[in-house]
Image 1: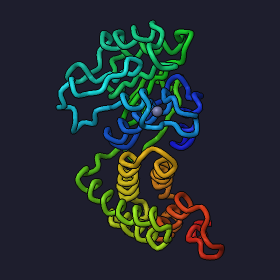
Image 2: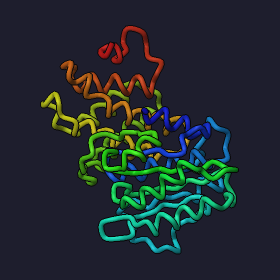
Image 3: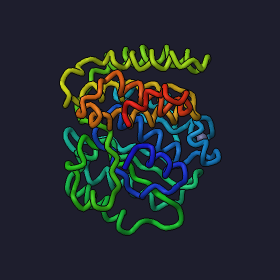
Length: 296
Ligand SMILES: [Zn+2]
């Protein structure tokens, strides 16, 4: 399933009870989990979810690995949203999973459903995975419960769990240098802001050029530059105010992960980047001048 499709299903409340978010890095998986949880519980009209501002959105926050030192008292709390982190050195225990599942036996406190995130599902013990499976097979009635299972690869999960879940792929499961992603995101954000305020398409070309700064494009099969570019765009989406631009940026991040197929046809990276930005961010471009034609 594509990221855009999953986000739309979440906004409409039609997401499958169990969704696996795999690939990418832990940071990207946690950010997407937060975005989906907000979309699922947000009280704005569906097309505006997640609004980022309502009493649900504002209290749903997933601590990223760099923020995990943050004192508990500072972390916002939502009673219908829970993130289960690994509790043992190398695994997530059946006891921890049972404690999470007990929450699903209660009716949601405030929201229309519950969202439960397993942050490192690849570390679930066999027993823990089976406990979770049982709840998926006999779901509590009354209100929707959504499980988001995060893992580097979906193959790391029990086949029975996989067969009961939808899966969303976030790109090659390699660890990207977060400092470089941050720098690339800043370089992309500047022309993007200029484009947003002026509408001048030149800035979109500059934004595409900024993403080319990911480097390493010479190898036609390389996934890494696309992963870097996607992570930088996802970072900007995360920073952006909720709304249309933010949704377009999430879509663009997904497009970039699927872009290596163009590169394999020997299309220049610059053309691909310009085409994807034009298609996603400025759907209306003068006929005959659309860089998207390079991808036709
Ligand atoms: Zn909201």
